[in-house]
Each structure stands twice: as C-alpha cells, then as structure tokens.
View 1 (cartoon, helix red, strand yellow):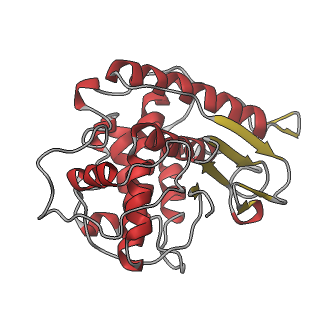
View 2 (cartoon, rainbow, N blue to C red):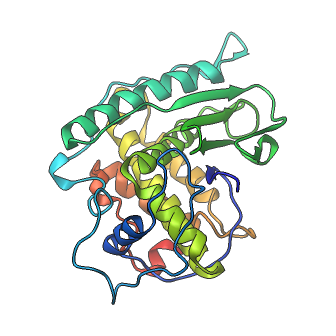
View 3 (cartoon, one colour):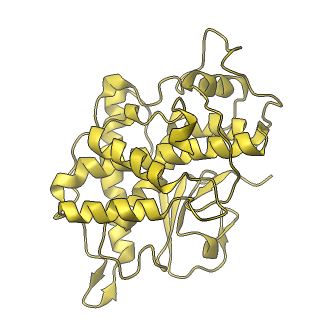
Length: 286
C-alpha cells in the first residue's frame, strides 16, 4: 500500500459530519501507526461521539495546547523571488523553511512537545513523481513517508509572482509536518481509510483547513518583519479564496470562503490552539 501523502491539490468527495477532538484522539488510541508512515492496518469501524471512552491517548486530545500560548514573533523578511532577472524560488523557499523551523521549533519547546525539522526537496521541472505523486499534478506536497517538504519551482504558484502566496503555500505544507509531529495525521489517516467516501472527504477538509489555519498563525507571526502593506494581505486573501474547491470537481480542501476564514483566524489570533477544525460545525468546513 502506498504511503499516505498530502499534496497541495487533491481530489476527494463531499461530506458533512463533524468529529470532535476527543473522537480524533480515540481513533489514534485504537489504530496505532508508525510515525513515519501510515501503511499499517486501520480499524474497520470508527468510534462515534456517543460511544467514546472516558480516557483518550495524547497528544491528539490537545495537540496544540493553550498553555503554550501564541506563536512567538519571528523575524522573517522575504528574500526576492527574482533577482537580476533570474528566478530565485529555491532560495526564497529555503529561507522560508528556515523561518518556519525557527518559529515552530520554539513553540514546540514551550509546549513541551518533541520537535524535528522536516527535510526539503526542490524540483526545477515538474517531471516524474515523488512519494508516489506525479509532480505535474501538484505545486507542493508534504511526504509523510519521508517527512519531507517537496516544492516544484515552476508554475503559476511561484513563477513571476510578487505576492505572499508562495510563502503561504510553504507554511501550509509545513503545517502538515506539524500535524505529523503531534499525531493528528496518524489519527486522521486511520479515520480516513476506514470511512465511506462522504465521511472521508469531510475529514480531509478538516485536515486541510487546519493546515490553512496553522499557516495563518505563522504568517501572522512574521507579518511585522515583512515589508508588506494591508493591500498585499488583501491580495493574499483573494489568492487563498481562489484556491478553494468552488467551481471544481475537487471537494478536499474547502470552499474559498472557508479557506480564507480559517487562514485569517490563524493570522489574527496567532494561536495554534485556535485551529480546532475538528469540532467546527459542518458549514465551517464545507
């Protein structure tokens, strides 16, 4: 069985049933998987909120504890995406990943959680596949098998851009690494594999929207160090909205309005604990 990966763009199906953090933690307790891969056997049925045990397994019960507070402000001035007419996407993303390592490493230390940096790979051409995913079908992805961020250096997501969207993509894929470190991905993968189509797609949207929120937390925390205006942020919100599932066959990442809502929630609260998409009402994760 192929490893479970999280590409930036993924096609799934629609559903509308919420799951509580307690239910997610129960799934982690009942379906232990290796932290580096998700190819182990998963339960054939999924616990419901009406039949949960009174105790659950850490860390999913509180993956981003409120006691850890906000993500601390990190200085992360952007490097140019183009310099002297030459694309500098690799350098831009390498710098972004270093900022993400610094910010989230400090937060995990405050929270008392074990932290490890992800690997990072960059591809000049969208040929071949990585982690079982054709590069031509994605902009970026996080490979859980290797705990590695993968970025293509071509395409509209990064070429000839002057906005903050490439940084948002990097922060979103990095958020999947955080979900792996905290056990959220492990529980999600178990539930996703066991669920029928509609339920699986709803779980996938909650997973992706949490990553949007965590990306917002990071970007809000570094905003003061960047030479960006309110107009730049409005442009970013528009780009996030345009990346929604609206008007496409894909129903895996959420409608544009919901993607913006969760991203903005993270950027304004700066609190990872505020990114609890798992207990949100269905309308907030459609």
